[in-house]
Image 1 (cartoon, rainbow, N blue to C red):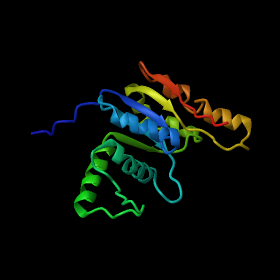
Image 2 (cartoon, rainbow, N blue to C red; image 1 turned 60 degrees about the horizontal axis):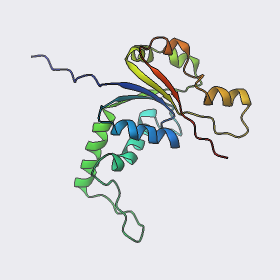
Image 3 (tube, rainbow, N blue to C red; image 1 turned 135 degrees about the vertical axis):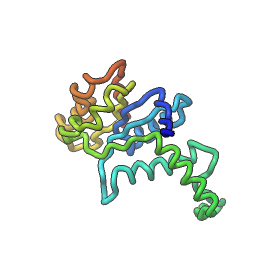
Length: 176
């Protein structure tokens, strides 16, 4: 007997900038949706850590907010207490469950070939939203680079043109 495939998610969202302040909150909210959206995230490998490792660590940090299990418990003295083995297993199961809904696409938005990759081209028709939270937060970046990073210009027409009923959302947090 053939294995049954899991039902397709009600929606798939492409999220950029999920490892940043704003993007991590958007990722958390997408994972909390009752509609069970799958979330595709574009993330760079950084500091010797793979993109998947970085996203998994982020989801682990978010898992306290996404479930009943507390990830870390700190007594009034402020010192973190290690998890019991049962707590650690529970946390890891929660993280694995959440990661089943996250497709990690390792790459950089600065790499033009990223958007020509087969995995992104195959994903495009299933997208219902592209949420661009990635940003250049360097105050001394050339204006052209800052505009490209912060205005969604990294999501090229080739990818957006293959989507159906897909919205492009640009989210920005400006601090003055």
